[in-house]
Image (cartoon, rainbow, N blue to C red; front, side, top):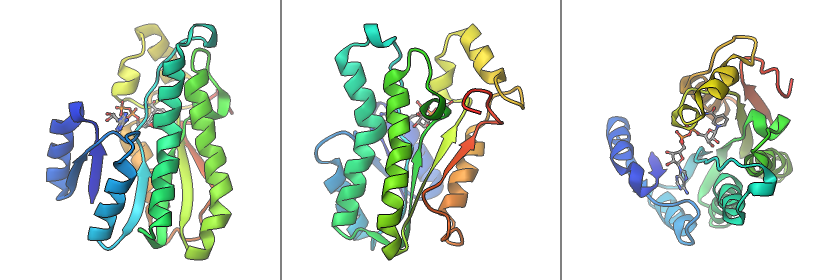
Length: 213
Ligand SMILES: NC(=O)c1ccc[n+]([C@@H]2O[C@H](COP(=O)([O-])OP(=O)(O)OC[C@H]3O[C@@H](n4cnc5c(N)ncnc54)[C@H](O)[C@@H]3O)[C@@H](O)[C@H]2O)c1
């Protein structure tokens, strides 16, 4: 197993990979050489069976005030990097037959969100990509799906201002934020070898969010 994160997260990444007996790869998914590094690692391990594209960022501002580099950065990390990595793995035959690709979209990629045109565009892009790729991958028995989380209690949502955060937590039928485990369990379902007939799907993990319902 390989876990990837950026340099500032090295300690957390190494601690987690230590627990899981995996390998920590400190890299930026948008760097030019990251796809090739992943291909090399995949080949060492006899190919990857499961690839989960979880890395993501927000850079929120209304479109009128959005610096161009915030737009580019959000699209690059949340969407383009996954496309480049998948292409490199598929071109090199480094994703095994019966492999699983799981993307992480967002309810804001389905419903949009004020101040998040960049984020919503990137996450809507994940959905379009999954739908477009699924038929092309079926010949190799590779499935591609994505989760679309609603409000989940993580570092990302801890950074939202208090009142907005409290509203975000409650805008669903469960009236509470979800946990990372809720999303992880859905990813694990997609990744299960028995889920071979499940491809091109987006599953919302949102407690029945009222936005995008
Ligand atoms: N928390 C939520 O409510 C929520 C809702 C919908 C979707 N999501 C999505 O879930 C995923 C996980 O988010 P989270 O809430 O755990 O956020 P988080 O900020 O806690 O985790 C995101 C991780 O991505 C890593 N990352 C960022 N840029 C990177 C890069 N260039 N290269 C490598 N790693 C990079 C970060 O270092 C961090 O470890 C993201 O794709 C996010 O958009 C989160």
